[in-house]
Length: 520
Image (cartoon, rainbow, N blue to C red):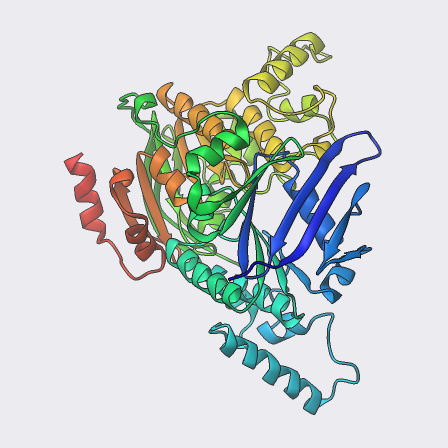
């Protein structure tokens, strides 16, 4: 099939007022009927580039050609009118609205009467049939699973008649089964003439789904490859300058500690009286990493909130080294040795207006080594901050850099550095590598294993099954607020089998899971 360039970037640069160059001399051509992956480490310029294509940013220099004609976007509305749509990593949906209302939001037909709305409903239903999206337009979005929410986002873009679709980390919260369905639909879209720009940190998925791959590093295009002609390891090396592996067995030392966290018959009812957590029982030992996986909305958020102290449980108990912390506030739990890496690094994990130094010490500012009776020990604070910036390879202009000036992945490294520095008996790590590149993920994984080997108990929540299998000693699968399975030696279990537990198609008998522990 003869290729046709539909979107071309020539000499694109983006230089901000503070002199930071996010993109330099970018030259890329996107073709019709292709899935084109964009990969690069955090801070490589992927997000800025996509913002310029979608009209959220204007290039400082260079030109963009659409079907051979030079164009200029002032807003995402301009991009949408010219056939470019974007599905963001974090869904832009109104939970209380129906599927139909979300798709029409902001694009309601003028003088919308019953007949006009019925016509638009029929058009959207036709789109669902054409692209094989099994959706009930009257379902409320808050009642949909994650996979169907993503379908709604894609349907919104198709309804806008987009021919070029940008997907930002589309599989970040999907099960293997949902990912497989998404890929089938992307291949269908490609076959119907669409151009898919696919941004992902999961190189195995990039290899599986894309036709071509463009690698960005430090704001520049390093190379573009036909996917079938390059291995994932080569792409990783081009991204960060070295080979990265997810095999950590040589770093895992044998440990046999006592239970640090014991959760016993824990139940939590939300404001509506619904049991979001039902009779939860598990332990995390010193020197052990226990993973928690599940489709989003099956109790992970409530479990984290209960353990850290955001929510009070309805019944049961939470023991930290034998002390019941169920009714303690967050500060008291931290004093007993609990550290926490939150999922939302911007809202809960950092203060955007603060600098790196202020953010680094925010969890342990009263520690004797950095705090005097009246004033902070500034030299000690600076020493700790500089040490963590170097250890975690945080790309910045020094400790005075504002958190808001960093890429998402580097903000994540600041949060992880802070919590691991004063890590005590138990660390709760919620999506510790979400949105970070393979090199940074490997660095964080090794830091987690180091803490484990030193005797810290770690409870890790992850939407990335390959990560959980590589790092964890044991995996708990949550489904509908219950522990559906407790899996030992997770690296020996296939992702598809874990996915069956996540979807509720398989459920482990509690006695069986207890037996596994006894066998160990």
